[in-house]
Length: 155
Image (cartoon, rainbow, N blue to C red; front, side, top):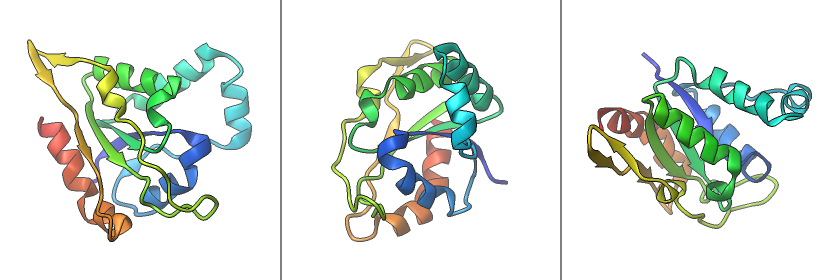
């Protein structure tokens, strides 16, 4: 059974890297929204919130694909908060070592989870964050993504 996940990332900087992960076909991730639909959604903050909330529904895990500026993105922060409030597992994966056809390799960004305190049942939870292999980040993600998500869910 493929897990259903919600991918959180900085669209402008990292969409090409994220597509590589989506194309692995390991998970049922949220499909990218069409540019025309996104233009309509993002006209209001409430429209974006409604879209995020709707797309988090039925997912077991929020996968934050961490690029150079992901931690600073307000919608990524909102997605983190909402996923946690809804009891979703959280996992982070650095994607700066994936080669983007437009921008090449990236710069390692800050851990977006460091901005929050996650607690459940009085216990502090540190979401798992993975930094794929320098030698072959793509293969490392492909071989381990499902396990990383399962580890987060067990946590």
